[in-house]
Length: 616
View 1 (tube, rainbow, N blue to C red):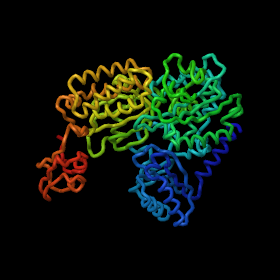
View 2: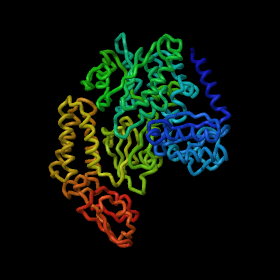
View 3: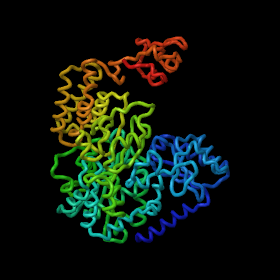
């Protein structure tokens, strides 16, 4: 089939869906939704519709980004805007369907926003929701709005129009278009995507390969997973365009096996593409042949590094090698190979569909376009966001994220995952772009963003991230293998009150050695959490070493809990919640903590409404 015929069929299917005389119910069925109970919600919908004797069309969608509100459900009555409901339980779900579909009560107290055209009195549209207001969604444009298992939905939303345009251009023109857009790799270093493609195109070879790096392994990062689950075709279309541009006929998606839902939806997407002539020989009737295979990784973090990833695809142990030669010169089986990550390919289709100038209109002169982030940690509105490059950190954390819960004070944010750095709250005016984050000692990385509040110990946070990178080191090079082990040992001593004054200088020196001497990006960036916490939170290190004190109340050997008699009103809530029976006191009289019995679980500190429990 040619593109025009496929598009006509898809548009007809979409128009039919929009004109349904019955309600349309969309259920958020990404991993975050399923983990929050979306399967139970789906079962409740079916049961309730049978009880009401009503017909409705149900549709599974991916994550719309509001993970803190999962499970989510959108209900659209004929001729009206869809209403999105969040934090659902089976009981809430049944009540909404009964009251709205039979009695026309939209259940405002459980509503989040409306989706699509039209308004509902008392409910703001999604563009006005605090979490969505500052976003510009390009890679995520379809997530949570279309059925990822139905290629018609993607095509009706403009999918594969970018590929159609690319096939009408020469490969060199496609590369120039991507270069003009200013798109930089969204997987870490931010190398210009078009330039990377050009290197692979110009390399002398009879065979070239395309690889999608979906080996997302950062703690707190879920951008790639959500995009593959919610809109796999946008990534696959980007791969097709890249393959055409560099002259590749075979591609691989390297995705970790811990993403079963993403793999399932990718396989379904590939089946549909082959059925419509979008993969295989003569793609869309052109002279371009291309096919894609899925390679499931075993979960080694180091395989996110390009050369280790290629070794794994070839059946070898995933270990980095020295560069040059770079993959664009000699990659898979010694042939020129282009490797981009999920989000990079997710932007390519939109660029070819809308033009390089359109895409370059977002962001900053050096960092154009948008960036997705997984917003996690001590922030009210956690989830998946996409913002224009250059936006200030404070706008992401306070405006989009809503700040810290329970009135706590935010202390800092870790950007770039375990290889990134901790940026203090006083530097939240910093614009989010490659150069600015690097100047602060951090990196963009793939897009993990973990917010930390006053109850976070920065020494413990550095220890946590180094524990991860040390365990994930492949061990090939000495600085990384032994250096991270020694650094971790020093941090553990600090958290246990065993460190000496000399250990701070030793930790700083080791960080520089590991950074400069390691073979690949894992070792070169592993010291970032340590170096940035030493740079911005030196006082906490001094407290741990010289005062044997953890002011955040995280490192158990370095603190204890006390109840301030002046603040305590004797409500007994702390004693009621204490499983160790360590709190005593008469009702309406100040209570006290028996240190010998206290397990330092922190439940008294968390539950006290008078803030009478203090960390000493």
